[in-house]
Length: 102
Image 1: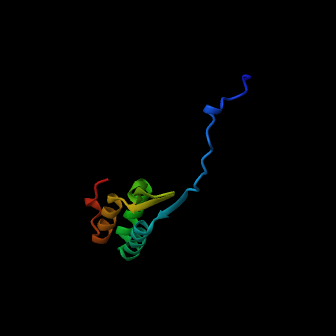
Image 2: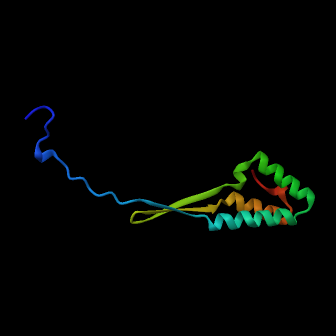
Image 3: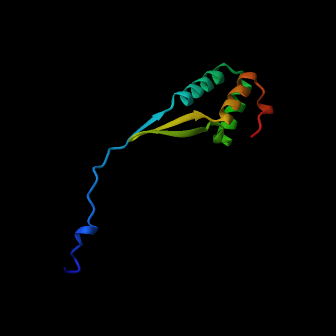
């Protein structure tokens, strides 16, 4: 046996690769963003401008949380609105952005 030879006992059998399928579920997050858009369009000008300024200064307000689930070779990434986004949306709807903790 030369240095380049591998003993038969050390050889491994190649396992077939199962293709991984990645999917995303963004329905809840998209709904929250649509509701945010609607709330901003219905808000008084002063509230709308303050909300937009807050978005520019604190983009994390429009963040999301995520979790994953696997089913065999399928990985699903679920994106959901963060608690901060839901609180921001509620503050815009009530017009009480001054109570929002950032």
